[in-house]
Length: 154
Image (cartoon, rainbow, N blue to C red; front, side, top):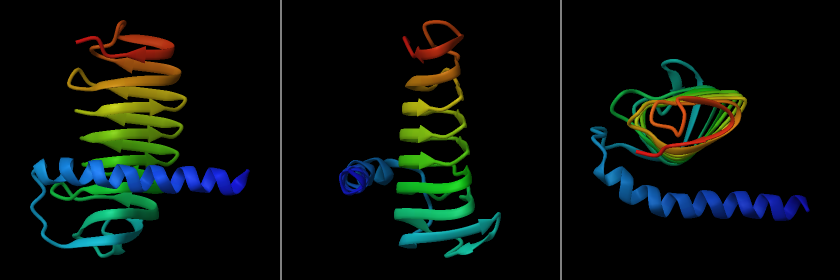
């Protein structure tokens, strides 16, 4: 059972990387350094510090600069990454641009497309997504705020 779960996660990340590559090429990311793995400990304390990630970001606190992106998996306790193309998962997720999914206790996204799963989910009117959680707030949702499920209609 555990092997099947790991296989599903691995295939999801790999499949997302293919889709994310196309989306990342269209982003306004200015850094030309690309790395498969980024390790983060706290703001401005990570290795490599100013790189785009095509793979996985791991850490206690994942913080991406304004111009950089993660294409793949963003995994940590606290995640504040501006551009995520894939899966962002931690206890507290904040992004200014996600194509994919956010999974955590608190998810907040601006200009996002995909899914948010958590206790609290917040999205702006430039977001096109499905929210599943205890509290779902989406400016362009079928209702601006609704418990359990919400989705964009505009």
